[in-house]
Image 1 (cartoon, rainbow over the protein chains, first blue to last red):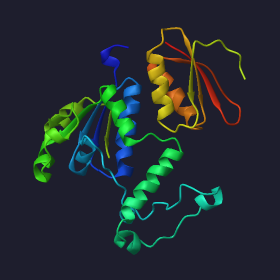
Image 2 (cartoon, helix red, strand yellow):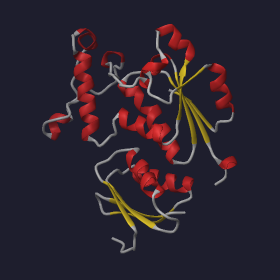
Image 3 (cartoon, each protein chain N blue to C red):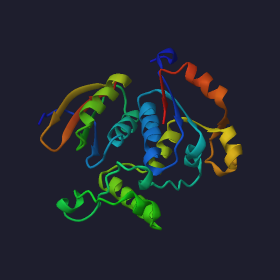
Image 4 (cartoon, rainbow over the protein chains, first blue to last red):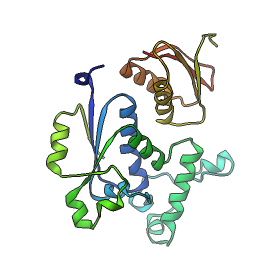
Length: 171
Length: 78
């Protein structure tokens, strides 16, 4: 396959929660495995996914359709969808931390890769990852806090890369 | 189940999307053209995904079969 045939994918990753960290890293690693050239532009809260240590959490109170299920116990118990009111999810201290560990446990039980694993595969397979300069300045991010190999870019750089892309998605 | 000669075996049982595809790709990178990988997965989505991956990357699925729990693929490196 020569370079002219090589497909290109350009992604924008704008969210930094555990659930929304998955789509860009799943698509980027899989596209690279399908011999595509991949660039991911991390902007706004997506920038946190470039941190050396990823500390992504899930926020159930902002995702009212999220099924609240337990990752342990008998199958019947695991299938119960717990009707937890939003006012509790948003106000009980530690609820987010608990929901995050439950989600991580569920993913592990189902053989889903961790975000860290998927990102490592992306790095290994030459996925280009860029941090958005403007949001870095606004939120006080430094390039030093990102993993090695991260580039810094702006809107024009993304558009130049995306102009020749076959697939472009905003996550 | 088919009795096909293969050169490498990869066990992806218990793994969910996209790991079977990513591990298959990694395993096949180490192989030479014309050799065959036997990959076993329990992910029902692998049926479409491994096929799509092989088509895109120029590898050939010789046989894809399912015994009820395991999805077994014999993939020839292109």
